[in-house]
Length: 351
Image (tube, rainbow, N blue to C red; front, side):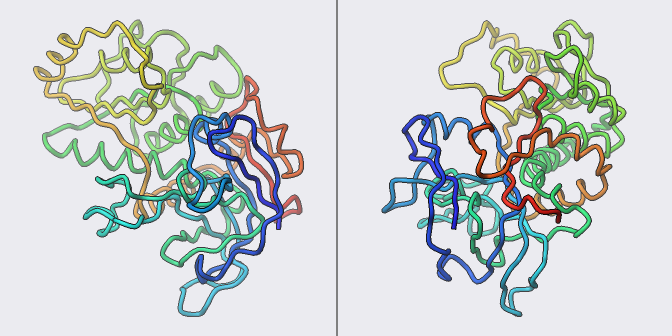
């Protein structure tokens, strides 16, 4: 079977390999891949900056954003042939911590986890793959190929869960939300904010085009100017840009008792002119909270599935700006100015 692979640490080693069928030892459920989403982590792995091959191999199958259909499953698994499914990314490693053992592997304290398509575990960018039932999420059939957005949506579902939990420490009754970055994660964060009834403001660098249009179609407000000049003091701020200069601005704003959540992060060693003393003063005197949030567990995948099911499918479809057949994988990169989510198509026939 065909699989899209890289040699971690080696730049531009992306290639299609012919691999054996997945062994039953990988799991009792066999899944046929439909689509794989491309994200910034994949780009870093392709560039040789990140990623770890499974032990005993020198290559890694890419793909952690997946959607597929069950081909084979035992009756006891709870899955049936034809079920639309998504594979969860993180799996327990050889020495799981107490959080991992309780199903909160997204809060792993020991970094002994493995991740499909990222860290020591082959990904989903292959024609067929196997996994265990507890590592699968069943999707409503009506989502179809839009299920490829589930993994990124699970990331922001966790962020929103954290924000909501922290907000309960006081009488925070948020109304205004700022999201920085209008990539897939930022747009999905805005979607979940709008679904919660908040006044959502999204900041990005584009003056026009698809991203501003998608934001406005949600009923949110789009800005392309500097956040620091907007006059906004939001109850909730979520950075999805991964830009050091944008994060600096995000940290500087915020209402008393508010929550600032960082989902994106810049490269290590990136410096800014942030006055840490002033920022600390604002957080302390304002009883504000700064938190980081990454990855997701089974609960967040379920929350994300509910959010996508409730969304306008036409709006979600607009996020999928390019579908590329597997054989044309070299056309994925570089990103184009109006790209939002690039998808690798393993099943060109209608589903």
